[in-house]
Amino acid sequence: MSEPFPPLPDEFVNRLGQIIPETQLASVLASFQQIKPTSFRLNSLKGNAENIKQQLMAEGFSLQPVSWFDQAFTIPDEQRRALTESDAFYQGEIYIQSLSSMLVPIVLAPQPGETVLDLAAAPGGKTLQMACMMSNQGALSAVEPVKNRFFKLKTNLEQQGASLVKTYLTDGRTVGGKCPERFDRVLLDAPCSSESRFSQLDPRSWNHWSIKKVKEVAKKQKKLLLSALYSLKPEGIMVYSTCSFSPEENELIVNHALKKFGPAIRVEPIQLPVNNIQHQMDSDIVQPGLIEWNKKSLHPDVINSIRILPNDIMDGFYLCKIKKLTSFK
Ligand code: SAM
Image (cartoon, rainbow, N blue to C red; front, side, top):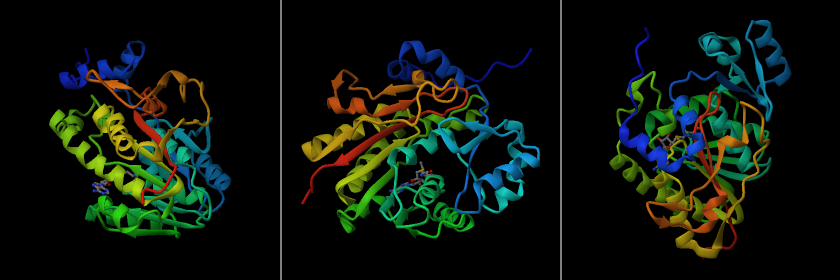
């Protein structure tokens, strides 16, 4: 008989029960025991995407297309190691990235020629995806304060040919003050408690988790979101994202910004590329933002943010798209 999985922390599971609709809870809990396929993106900055794809197929990789993103594919987890030893990987022609993570730049939609900020960038998966979306045209600033992560970011950018990116080893909380109203679009993929990375196949994945840690990181997230909003031009768009489920790191952070800036910002509805694609992006896994937590009502517009619920393919993620309507000056 196989060993039972080690249980997730009780407090975490109880909280999930308050966050996630009852109908989805069992499949969300099951996802912590699943091995997902490996997903990756073709790097359009390095040669012809079709050629890279054909080469990988010729090498025996079983590529499955992702219906809502033509640059993305999945392969069975058993082929992951071989993929990391392939030429395409070493040449920076592909980037291994979770599908939920790929959704974030898609929602932000940076355009060639724009001035864009990635305020918490390492190791750079989303920076690289934005560089592809901008065809290396425009200005893309990537901020990371943790030294070893900063150098990993730089290596990845270089290897993948993202030449438009300028990197800054600095604390994102200082950027709004130093560069007010500078950017057309800002991505804040915030440092978080990484709850969606928990895996019952590796109990170390939740070793560092506690409610105290969630509350600690939330303080930083509040300051980072304010900094992101200060750095945005009027009419500019930003996306706030985390890979955590906790409302303290998600809806409450957005609620704090709405309270501070009032009608100068608006939480925009999110148009996902495709709904209802079975197993890839079923509408059942897209949950609107909570507007009440711990008996406290939140700003009603927070309902426009979304939580991607994890399943056998997607990881859990929280996304909020915010438009700055007027200057804060
Ligand atoms: N966007 C990245 C990607 O897609 O590859 C992942 C970013 S990760 C969720 C959050 C990053 O924020 C970490 O690299 C962390 O070191 C960094 N970070 C921590 N504190 C920060 C701060 N004060 N300002 C900016 N970034 C910070």
